[in-house]
Image 1 (tube, rainbow, N blue to C red):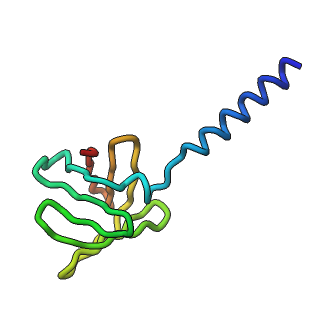
Image 2: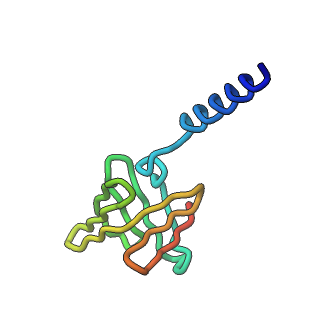
Length: 102
């Protein structure tokens, strides 16, 4: 009986953690400052738009664990994206860009 209770608790806890999991689309919303350049930030808005500290506007979209950033006037980047708490890591090949949520 004790074993069944323990198994049920583990199943319930695992199920609850899934309820609190946030998608990357939701996790990146808001402003992020680049750790290596505190004067540079990107702000991601609902609906797939963004703006950086240079005043450039653009769009973003998520495809699995990748993000496509497309800037008005040209230029785009397809980057790996990982968000853990208040840290976002964008990767392109061996390059890695770390951001902290403002």
